[in-house]
Length: 245
Figure 1 (cartoon, helix red, strand yellow):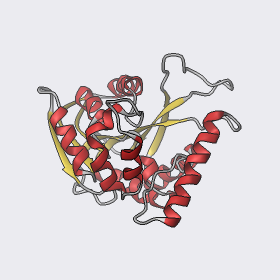
Figure 2 (cartoon, helix red, strand yellow):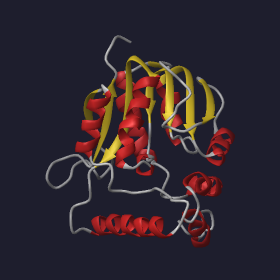
Figure 3 (spheres, helix red, strand yellow):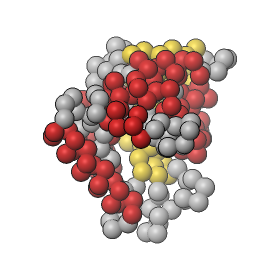
């Protein structure tokens, strides 16, 4: 993260003391060279699952950032792909990096809780963005995803298994979330980014309340196929809006 190509510690501190929108505007030029970008292994595994469920016509990358997930949509959608994000800086970097060819790709600056579409997509995806939404916002977020999908449309996103209690990963996430809560109690505007507010059980319950029929697919990654208890390290959650495609 602190390599010459990535953001410096000072730049990350300035970002963390900004709003979510402005912080990502600042980070955008170097975002793809940080650990915050979704790894290619996760994107590739997701593409394989969605490729078997498709093909799709129109795709939406929700909270698209610089467009890592848009690459998945370009591979499984035939006609149109739209990326939506609240950060103009992230969208600008994504536009500049988009390769030619494939389905038409556009970028729209919008709030994920108030999307400017209705019944427009066959597939919506999101990668690494849900820590920016508090648990109380999750029903509204899923309701928006449901609203912009056509009948039979799919809403897909990966969810990682929580770290084993007592492990180094567990204490890192607990420490990060605690530090973020202290920061938001003392400093405004808030920067919402929590790792422990998106448990699978709560997510599935909220998807059900939004009207989705949900299926889980394991996403095997090299060297990370299963946890010691046999459960997948990573699952792809796919919610389907009832109706015919």
